[in-house]
Image 1: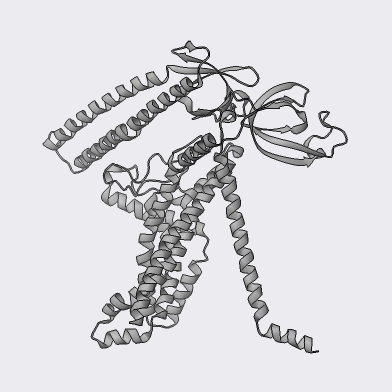
Image 2: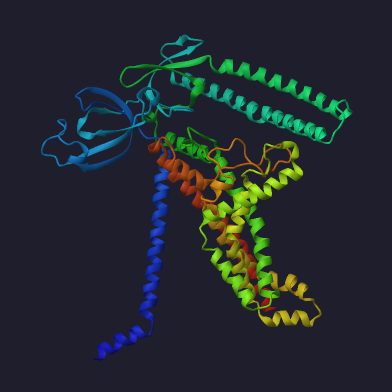
Length: 557
């Protein structure tokens, strides 16, 4: 009886529930850390250069073929699902081991990856001479270097690897110059030509006489720009001629010869001949390319810098927009609105807005911001561009506004809670010293509520950075031709579409034509998105804690 009574008293004390809550929180933390670790290992491990294997493989029809590639995955499956009555497998085996091999050479084999039965592989080796070639198109190429050509003639029938790398480096330098001319120089000329066209269109709409001085200045400037454009195209023609003159011949694992232009090569390496130091250097080069480069191969290769830039810029614009709206609404509801049924109804509506599906906000943003507001802006301020829309089309400004509307309830609730925590005595003391209500609010109450405002902003940033559904309707695209921030006036182009990490994950993971190649990139992008959200949140938390300590010290004095 005493023991039962002690157990009952222990439960009544509430201590078991404290331990239960602590255990649940600990389990949640362990699961989150484990999930992030899994994403990190699967994503970042993709950039390590794997050894390339060469082996003979007996196909299902008995044909022996030579294959080469990287082992990327393996599994054990029941015999009935994998091989059935396959004669290549021993009759007494119920579980079959098979491996996923990245064989590359998609333009020759038709596919990048292939499942092979381990029991059907023979003569497995890792030759040092086999090379892996990353290409701008058609994925990786695996083979043996045989010869180097210039203008269709063999210049080296047994090329040295260092000489081969020099050709790759020279082609890379030419490609960088071509990219600079096409994107920056010619892009700037085309942008200014378009501005001249719009300026001329404005003059026509304003009934300016065709022979006026302004039209003459426009024609003079257009002629000058055309000369620049012709010079740039001549340089491009020369560079493309240099780029396409060099090629190399390589032998595939099966003996087939292939000729590839150096212009199509991103990099070439021999992973089986690389030591740990070489592989480490290569790994960080690939990691830097992933963070700083542009995507290629339908976003399954290359980098994701435009998506990083678009995500951060959209979140920053959203933060600038949502904070004033949320704070003003909270101040009105808490400090100025008469507390009654109508105010309570507004609070209920604000709380309910936080539970509305995000795609509904996207539909609202498309209908109100893009079609109505953007279309009106085009008619009033950009009639020369019509019927081509300027702001009447999805863009980063409308995406940021949509995200601001989506997250404003969080900021309102958080700010109201902060206002409620400010002691009434501080307000009364300020009023007693002769300050007006507005001065009390601006100079005393709001500074003390800054930490609560930033708490709401932190939650808003975390949600907005990971949203995808509404952004698909109001501005995000698979591949943006140009970023919203560049060197052309007015530098920040809020009407442009942009790339986003969340949409990039969705697109690569579910819309990619090459799912196996895209899977590691999904993990890597997801991990990077987590890091960006953590960084943005830590920056806001640092500011919040600084303000909290500042005003806590002021209260003590």
